[in-house]
Amino acid sequence: MTDYFQDYITVAVFAGAGIGLVAVAMGASFLLRPHKPSLVKRQSYECGINPVGDGWSQTHVRYYIFALLFLIFDVEAVFIFPWAVRLESLGTFALVEMAIFIVILLGGLVYAVRKGVLRWES
Amino acid sequence: MSGLLENFWVLLALKVAIIAAVVPAVSLVFIFAELKISAHMQSRIGPYFAGGRWGWAQPLADGLKFIQKEDLVPDDADRPVFKFAPMVVLMSTLAVFVIVPFSPKLVVRDLDLGVFYALAAGSFGTIGVLMAGWSSANKYSLIGGLRAGAQLIAYELPLVLAVVGVVIQAGTMSFNGIVAAQAAPVFTIGEFAIHLPYLFQGQVIGFVIFIIAMLAELNRTPFDMPIAESELVMGYLTEYSGLRFTMFFLAEYAGMFSMSAIAATLFLGGWYLPGLSSGALEVLGPVILMAKVSLLVFVIIWFRWTFPRLREDQLQSIAWRWLIPLALLNIVGTAIAKVVL
Image (cartoon, rainbow over the protein chains, first blue to last red):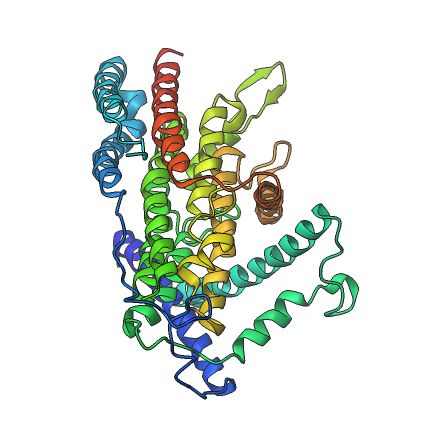
């Protein structure tokens, strides 16, 4: 087996260990805990009164515009990492190029801020 | 015996067992430290009964109590998602420990893409938090989950961009490579070599941004709006009880451990301490790293009793208007220094 696959297997096994840890703990607790469900216990919590309306209530999602901004900058981050690793050998040309790239993106951020994306008062 | 230890699968099983034992144990120590430090910062004594001296057994007693608690799933909840959410959170937490180097050789797997992997695996836990918030079918949980998602979106970028400065300086994304780069002397005066971690090699801005973003990723005060006891009951954890709640709790402290270990490795030199031979580092490496991690964890706990909670729009504007532009300028500055010098 090559190193390459060993990396992936290690990561997969560790992620699986997280699931296993919870499963084992829940199993151990299953042997010890009481199980006496009642209507009141199974109700959603809402300050001790009967819940009003649906739990999945309408919420003002202000965050979707941030999600769009995030997408742009996260893709940028993907470009920046390989550049950062190889910068020493790539030299001045790569530096200037990335500087231009970052300035363009910063321009986008300035535009979004000036548009009032971050102002929450309507 | 040595032949057995060279087998990939045996070694892997051993590593999983060690990490699965060490991480919860260290988390318990941090939980106890938080109880005690919080108490002393508020002129209280804190736990003093369980276990006798200093009440050291308090987190263990809490854990035992939680194991015996009834497992409640609300009728309205989305059952499979509700039950799977703590697993996702713990999955991401444990996966991060794959790359944390405790000494030159004591590392589960020194991935070439270490830095990138750590950030990706670390932010994966937020999906679990969103799942918990959504599946609970509770208004507080829903708002808490959405806040957690928004927080991740806003602070993932400063976190990622702050690390780029270190990657530029080290020229590698492997964690052990980054520590080795910090172990190289910066300059020598005669026979005397000066070693500096990246924090003192011009990454001060990067470090400060990383710590702020780390607090936000961990939902720690002053960025604990997703849980916000005084407004959202317990945020996305409102409907969780017993052991499932404990799993989230454990994941929070294990997350403090992993993120502090990453910060210590990237900015404070990890297992390296100047003046020690490589043989000594092999033995003392874990101790040195844990000392640095403990220092950072203490600072995180200290912040909790120092800063008030931010408002949701303040959180967003700090990230987008200050931290991201600053992090980008830090990248440009570091890159210029790297190419010109």
